[in-house]
Length: 105
Image (cartoon, rainbow, N blue to C red):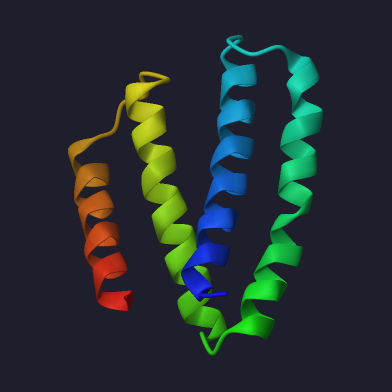
């Protein structure tokens, strides 16, 4: 299986898990959903291990691609779904992260 499939799985697990937690913190989602968030988070190390065992990608590259790509998507969810706001300085940081993601691929 190609490394990007594992990265997509990691991203989906993390994005959904963190979105549930944010929804609970804002009172938009019932607290009973925290269990699902915790279960999803518990699979992250296993999927990451499978990624490292099945591909030639290095640990630093895999971790950076996973963190940056899921982080960018989480930021977009925060901005458009949860109405979070970011500063100009944070916007520059996000653009830098996007550039780094392209350079890593």
